[in-house]
Image (cartoon, rainbow, N blue to C red; front, side, top):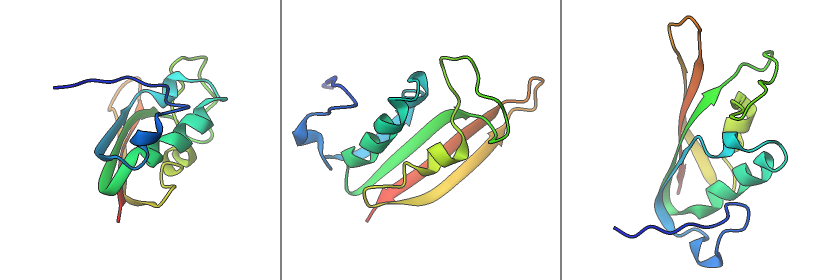
Length: 113
């Protein structure tokens, strides 16, 4: 297996639409906003033709106050923002831990035609 690392806000040009599977798990929510919004916009650009993006993140309801973080749980609109650059939403699942505390988690799948 071969691993590489890069700056999510400025990925290498050869990574543009290069991957069959991209998994975003807890990375963007570790970033304050800014630059979280810019990071969310970069992730879909990594998914190649016919590829899939899976997103797993802690979440919060729109009416919940922001947490002091990091991490900063994502609201649904931030999750929906991954459907950009030609990606279509396949499913967004809202998972709630039975708690207490009652935690919200997101699991989402996006696909490029």
